[in-house]
Image (cartoon, rainbow, N blue to C red; front, side, top):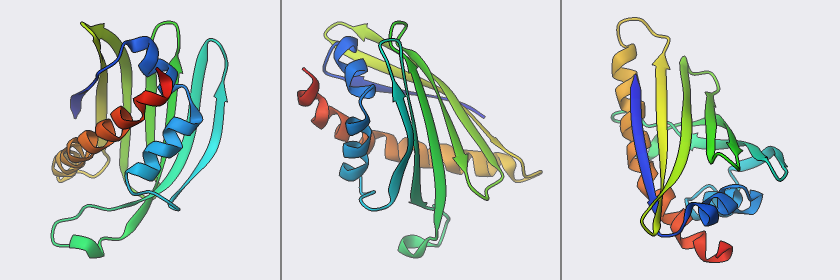
Length: 160
């Protein structure tokens, strides 16, 4: 299933890219969105041209009827950015789940703001019910995206 998401930041793309290319931004964003003690940075590499970070975290599995008793799953995010082109890629590995997720990312200036676009591809490997699972995952991503964007906006002041 293909799915496009956009996040708008009240800053130029040069500032947003500086933020996205900082390890501390990623850890502070996780702390701000409730992952304190539930993540670890597996790898982080950056230079004048590119930045990549690999983070493992424990996330609740959203399942109908589970509520707050939902089990946790291990998710590994691999995020890579080309600083000059302001494009990147995110690959998400959901341990033990028959799902593949990745996206191509880009950022551009729109007026005084920066818009980051995520072109997601979500694929379930389960026949018959795969489409339903993909829709559940996309709905969950949409719900969490606004919280993550707001947490990132709150951190922008550190990069101006």
